[in-house]
Image (cartoon, rainbow, N blue to C red; front, side, top):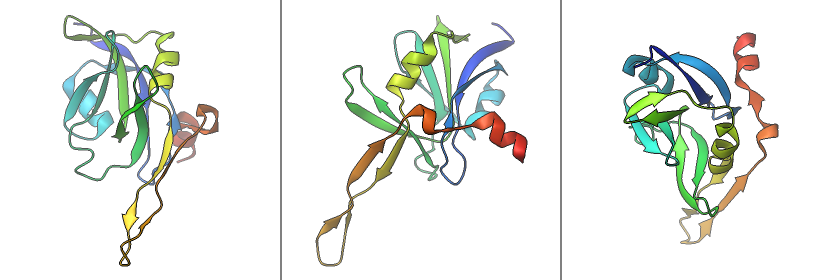
Length: 148
């Protein structure tokens, strides 16, 4: 197993600001992945070759919305919260993500704004909308991190 692997990281901050994904090298350890996602990890098969690693308890802990997960047909499958790590795998071992995987990841995990339906005291539902927006509208995480 390689000590370091190339990963594609998609971050969201505590205020719910979603950032552009970026390539970086991470330690290929459980602890390094847990640090990035902020807790216990869950591995989800995005494609036959690409895995995403997310926080296993992210929704229960109320982590901020990051991306919507779309099927190859563009149908929403789920929403993802917290930071996301995308890597490849070979025989259940994580390996380097490839530069050309970025297009697939961004197509299947577009940024989203989600408004939930809430029933008022009068029994009427209000606000039920989902907005996708362009990756170009997102901030660069590294640039924002440098400002802190």
